[in-house]
Length: 168
Image 1 (cartoon, rainbow, N blue to C red):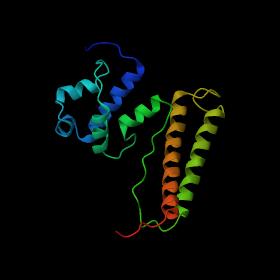
Image 2: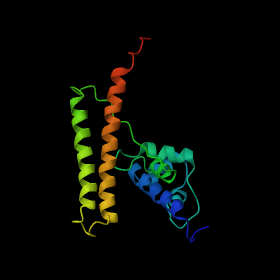
Image 3: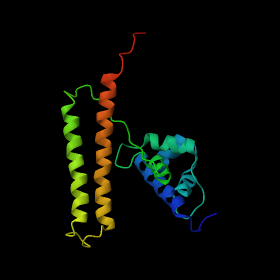
Image 4: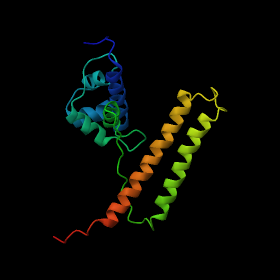
């Protein structure tokens, strides 16, 4: 069972499971939520164990994790392996005064992405005109921020554009 070299994709899922368990409050919290033993949950987090968490339990654990960067960890890892991206919808903010804030945030993030990529290509970075893994990761971090800003603006506009709910 254990001590095998797993394929990269399976190791990424194990790492994501470990982050999700930590974000949820640890093995004991996940044990109480799923009914699985702490030992079994640890197996799911190991990059050397073929055991994989069920989708049902992945949803439970991701669902109780804190909203931190990368959350939902397991779902995001699965999506990445399939060439997709997960963007969490923002909490509904009824106090948002107008859409200007969303548009300004979007503009700032587009600028950050453009600057990160341009700087990497300018030849003044770590490895000249060749984009380094660190520069690529910095650009990806800015792209994630851009995606969140886009999702928030979309959510606000959809809320404005949707018809009001009828009273019960």
